[in-house]
Image 1 (spheres, rainbow, N blue to C red):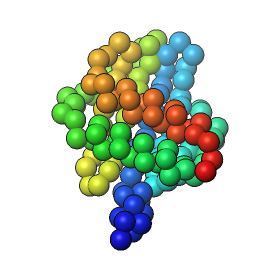
Image 2 (cartoon, one colour):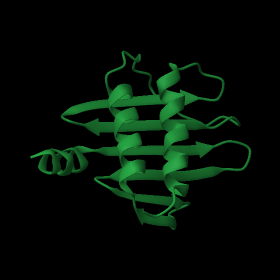
Image 3 (tube, rainbow, N blue to C red):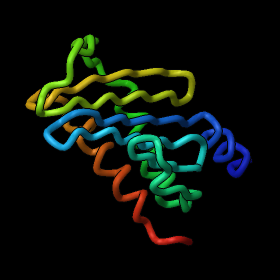
Image 4 (spheres, one colour):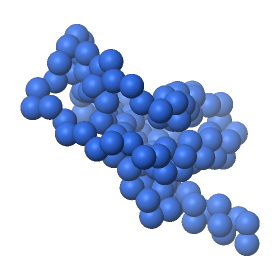
Length: 127
């Protein structure tokens, strides 16, 4: 039963982080769907991997926390400033959260923890 629940939770998880703009003209998308992570840079696949259990569990836990936060809805501006924009979209266990951060914006600590956790997951040693 625990394994079935874990498999269901893995299937329910989707996190997409898109960083665009900035002084270097970034266009990087990090996506975790179920247990699969894909990173694209300007549309080209930069990295793709199946997440080990530990990395997936961390990302899932952080995503669930962020999905439940009361973050104000903000509209993306019509232009991207030199500081760039990060858009985070999370769907987990039926909850959906969309967060748009422009350079210099403040956000609750769990949002930053999720971004850090995704970077750790990308480099997590294979199990």
